[in-house]
Image (cartoon, rainbow, N blue to C red; front, side, top):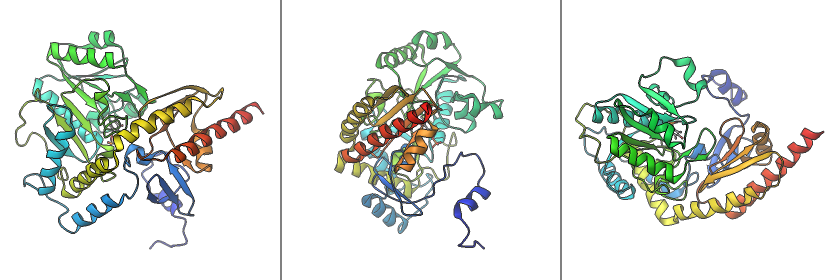
Length: 397
Ligand SMILES: *Cc1c(COP(=O)(O)O)cnc(C)c1O
């Protein structure tokens, strides 16, 4: 029995696996761009569940769709047809870049990447995958083999053979790594986890051309950048390229776990049994993703992300602090690289009622809900400026 007097944070700390570095904060409720802790303190949420709650928390349209679907049908594996899934697949393919008309549904970003790697290997009959240094593609063994961070990889070697890593945004080094055994190149348009680093459109266009010439498939991982985050539906639109496989996740179903990989015409016709997932394409997640598409349309969220993102990056760039090395980002995916460790800034922001993410040890990352108001963004920027000023004073004291 759980004693209601026992501190729930302590209980969680005692029984959790230990793989997460936890903040001293228990979040119990959310609405729009706000979340609340158990003491009732409100925070502006610039984490949004790590870029998941693009539509904000507890959006009434999503809440209603979930409630109706929970009352109708929760589970229905893909060996059957389902009305919600059929509608979602059709509506999603309308939003996807031209030619990406088939979609494999799963339950997380890493599963989307796993599927993309499997489909690329099966389509080409080759094993090799070239990924980028600082790239992040997930933590299951296949995706982890594409992820670069040594800390994440090292305890689990040997990983899947055939993977190599080249410097990001460097076409010569990529070309040098391609061989007759290369099935696919996998890249993010903006490297998220490793520090909010956008690649250049010229790079992606050159990669696209090189893959076409050599019969190599291009996997673009938009688990973080997809669904309007960067001010376009998908970030590959900024680079004016269309991938052969597009991996999606995070915000796709507004907070209900879901992943997807969209397949272009160069991906083989997949056969029954080649891949699968018990929960993949379940009606609850599909109903959620459909509600999300409705909300994007009603609220013009992609335009909002573009406009608010430009405003946020401009305001961040105006913060005058010797602790700031660089501000960068794309749309409403903002990064501020410091000359010092970012942890104390995150803590100072939490004190001031702003929840933010880090990306690497020195980069502050902001991924707020796409409809966040100008006044909330102003509050966030002021909190960052004030916190940096305090940290600088402390460093000089
Ligand atoms: C978060 C993320 C993943 C992994 O998604 P999970 O749902 O955590 O498995 C993969 N790729 C990118 C670019 C991500 O940001």
